[in-house]
Image (cartoon, helix red, strand yellow):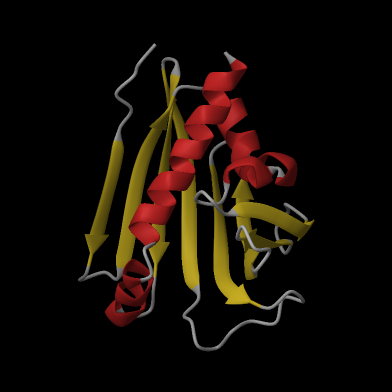
Length: 166
């Protein structure tokens, strides 16, 4: 079992992208399910002490996930993910946004294009996330909000789920 799993977080200012490459000690089928099923996403898709709560999810092209990250006092921060393309167990692409509990997009925050790719090397699954923004200031806004730390934390939550299954 590999214990030093790759976590590579890079910002490409010239192309307005963030790239996160992460290894998981799990099969591609299990990792795919964790990223594409609401019941599993809600177990890991929020940095502690927040919890994830999916209001609705339809994982298909043209579908969406409307969810909240809920703090310890019950305050909700809502987000919308629109599914643009899906290649099962290989890649999916989304358009993400902050919104209200009804899915009305907050115009004060930029939308982000995500491409999430999956590949297997032995017992390890590699997830390669590319997040594209229209302009550098959009990336800088997300980074200033603690995106790197928060995203790193949620990926560690997913490690715990896979470890508990062993």
